[in-house]
Length: 126
Image (cartoon, rainbow, N blue to C red; front, top):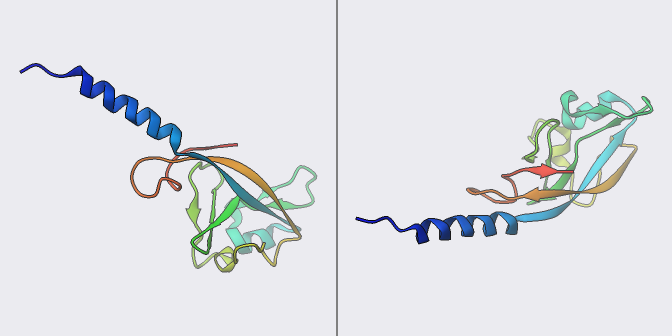
């Protein structure tokens, strides 16, 4: 029986179109803290990084989905939902942490993947 190359090419073309269609800009927020302890209270100490002046700390990039903040852990490109043990878990949409001294917004490109919710599985670039 002869294999059809037309089906394989159609599947490859469909996958390429679907992969490019799953990209979107995600508006994120990032809080600034006066101390590492204040940042660690919300995100855990491994998620806090010192700013360039050495006087403050940044928490991770995060955004709200389903009423909860999702954040991008340091060194990872895939967002994860906050856990009940993190202070950030109780943060509400439109608000920043009460421990933060300020916050700022930015955008990240979120690329979807296959399986599960495409928004939360895939690569991210700044």
